[in-house]
Image 1 (cartoon, helix red, strand yellow):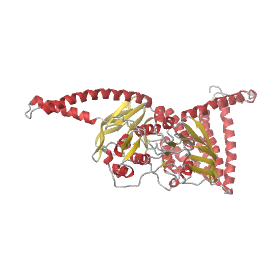
Image 2 (cartoon, rainbow, N blue to C red; image 1 turned 180 degrees about the vertical axis):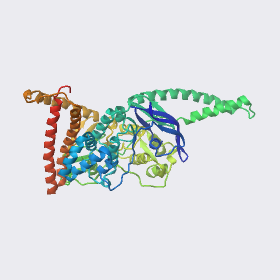
Image 3 (tube, rainbow, N blue to C red; image 1 turned 120 degrees about the vertical axis):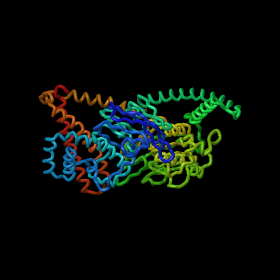
Image 4 (cartoon, rainbow, N blue to C red; image 1 turned 90 degrees about the vertical axis):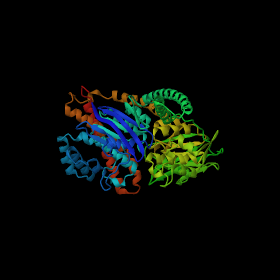
Length: 620
């Protein structure tokens, strides 16, 4: 049975038709991805399904009683509330109880903590509290009392994602859920969504994420919806089959069109009824042929400016902020044609390294030497062109009328068409572009300046899958150097030949190969560590084990709650040294953090012992 049914849905914005006569449903347990080009109506469709936008025709029907949660691409919050207030906005039931408990913890009100602890026990609210801690902790939130107005745009998107995951809704609408998440967060989210018994429809450009979470793909193309019952890999296979079939049909239509066109030209002006019917059939055939838009555009190889033997050298480069090392004693000599990825958690220093290379920041120690022939092209994270009342093609031609290639040149218009700006859309006003289209245009302007060293900071955010494929083809054939920060694992696998990993405390490790090669090398070390741990555990004295009985329902729930609590505490413990480094000479803050670190160790030890006691009971 469908949770959501869409019947005859059509929507236009001005004279632009986004989609027409869409019919589909989302059933219980179905997890579907929505794929479409930038500016073709993905977000508009989600807004219509969420009841935010109206529709021109058709209707959206939700099964009675179905709770829906919607993650918008650009969520908004009141500025003066805390993270905790945003999470417990409903203020009822367990939410109100956990909110009061968390506030008591933050204020160190021991009497209130004791009272609420018992109430939490009586009302079985610990599971909900543990779930909140797990989700907020995994998304990088430590201070629950922080003011929402002080959060960055990326942090607000993460907070909105946390609200959706905690909503206990049956049906989720997610618009780019992995934007602003680092790779560990993305991997956690895909595991979380995979194991939840929910239905969802999401827009995402992260192909590995779609592949591992979704069991169906909807493709919105030319106003029509195509449905593929499988993951992203299955979609690619079946899409290729569909396009091959359509190409055969099109070739037959073209052949008929040519012969019918000859007949039209030879026909005299006086025409009978049969001839009029044939003319109408010709007009329909002509419409079919002209609607076709080729998907396989010829791949070209850009020809950047000459690059000398000396490119870029970093010698013992160091950079720290507020006593915390982000880059420490980093050495590297860049070689011609290298394509390097930068990976690491949010806040680990990736953008800092790029800004050092570009001269925006100065190193604390060490030297950075740039070759005389180097021409950088720097795509900044979150960057956009200034607002203007010009058309797309006018903006581009101000930068370059043509782009040099190894086989000659491409006109500015051909270059735009390759990256998905059709010849018709090139005459759109800049102000009418969607956010994704504006960001794509900013990227294309960076590429068109013909640099020989590209520095790309999160170029994949907000780009549709089609543009990502074109960008990957461009970079694969690019003859200059590339240094790219991206959380898109598929993109990194296809583009880079080795990886810099920022591991914390200023250390940068260099791994040959792509991102999957790095994961394989990292995971190959884990079995030896696990084996050693297992051996240690088997050597423990069995006489020390507590007598065991089968777990009661309450004990089973306690055990599950402990697992989440221990994970959250371990995460907080791992982050505390960084907070101590950031505290600098604030002795009061340092003393508080040191006290909290000792508390965390004691809590982890106590909860782990209790978990082991429950785990060793039979029936587990």
